[in-house]
Image (cartoon, rainbow, N blue to C red):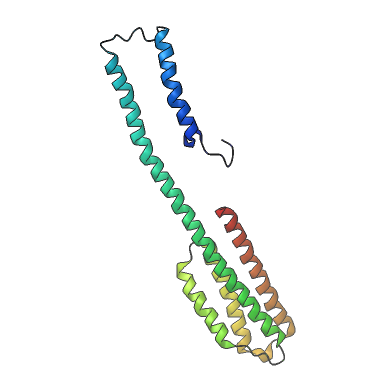
Length: 191
């Protein structure tokens, strides 16, 4: 089967061809004497036997197909939920980057809105227990480490050097890029 193409049994035209072809073939074979071993008095029993087997096969196949389709839909919904979650985490990672940038820009007075940092910490704490997969949990930990570094920097701003602030900025930028890469990989898996 080629990628992007449905299997033959999902094509209605294939079923029409099959329904037309099989009886025509059976009729042609019966005219040629292929079924001479079936006597007239046992023919109804043979027809019933064949269609009973077909009925049993359909009775097994239909529920199995429904279960498979439900599982695929559930997995797709889970992948979409994970993707949405990772989009939110990317937003948090960018927010940490913005806070670090703001801190780096105002490095002379080294003040920053602690309310924004506290809000960010609360949102991270709320996301942690509902992480849909290990990848998201790892991103939360990475972002949390950035926030902890930022909080530590804010608690002792006078002792920080410009190199330490530049390190905080590089770390936040690298983690934002990591979050973007994880999001891109999750998006590719969802498509």
